[in-house]
View 1 (tube, helix red, strand yellow):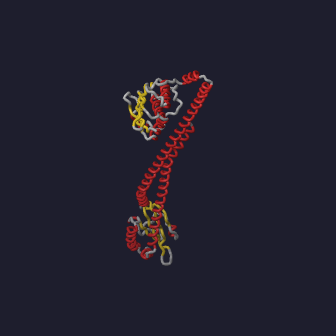
View 2 (cartoon, rainbow, N blue to C red):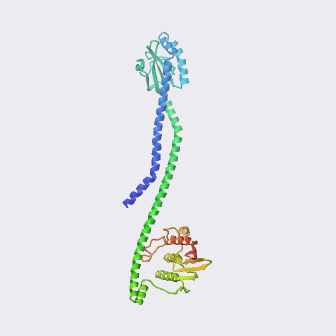
View 3 (spheres, rainbow, N blue to C red):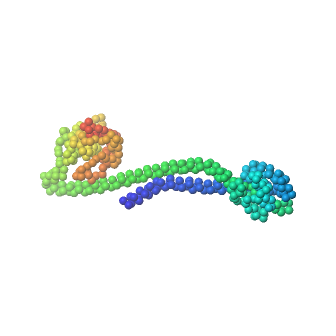
Length: 416
């Protein structure tokens, strides 16, 4: 049981592994893509604000206004604020702040903030460094670039700060995500469907292997049972041979009758020229009779009935007897180069839903008592053998319901 449970666990893992791998791969790929996308948006925003700030810091108009700011601050503001407003709209940034070397704002998108000291530290910029990063200012948290503004001699005369709100950057990332998600969902759906198909194919393969294993085990058990019966049969033949060789004919006949009841000429016709058929019907009469089933026959043939026809009759009659019939009616006639046979019984019959599966290998509706002579044989082999034997002889076989309520088998086979 432990081994079977382990096998089932391994099979379940193999069935669901493709789907789990697809989901994991899509999630990992999506996470990486989102990280790359966010980094790309931030890098592009950083380059934009730095480019705008650096370009403005090089403008002669900005440098000239800053050099005159201490002489007439209002003139500098009137000259630079319109420029800042135009740059904000044209470059798509949220603010452009120009301040002097003391950190006093000359331009700002909020008029009340003009003329006031900047709200963030500008010391590194006024020392000649360039700053790119996220800070919180008067209009909110922004990704900003700060660059120094120098005069013609290279002296720092002010600072220029350009920024974009973090909320706008987040919106850009969400927009990129909304465009990316449909592709992610599509990949997930296609991958899941594909993995489900692979799982279905694997499950089908597992079932085929299970069926093959069951058939192999059935054949092994059948072979073992046949070997047992063959050994017992050979032993009995040796006993019969010993009795006959010593002239004890009467004892030999009594021994045979003790093994199985033997009847003669009980089929309503003389079968002197049909030794195989006669022996087959005698054996069937004895076997079925031992289980309380009566065999009735209707034989009308001129050609010799060979082993294959006898095999079909034997299996069909036994099948009816084993199914619990009290009477089995066996008919075999010859016409136009064909043997036509019909086996009827008064048993429980075959359910309509199972008629199409009757000749499938391994199928059986039999429920035998513990002392049945067929109990050691594997079920569901005889009818499959019958079907193959009949079709190999250019005939066909069909199954239906008898008027007595049991099963009806009809077949035809070429005379050879």
